[in-house]
Length: 54
Image 1 (cartoon, one colour):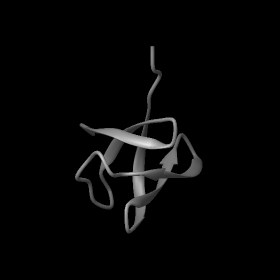
Image 2: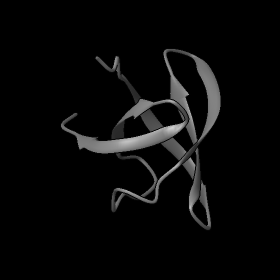
Image 3: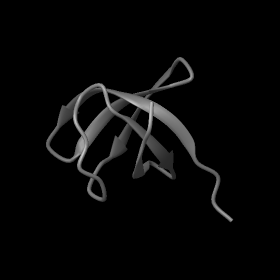
Image 4: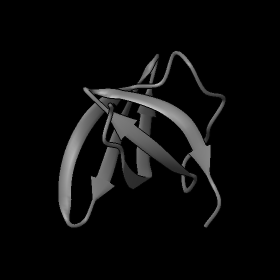
């Protein structure tokens, strides 16, 4: 089982995004999703795995 956490993309550089997850800023890979700054994504193990509805 995989636990995901939603976060909002603050900045994108190449295939990496800076994401705010509950006030914690972290870097995740966005190879699996087409997302832009301001979008919400579900993150697991340093990867954005799905775009989320706001």
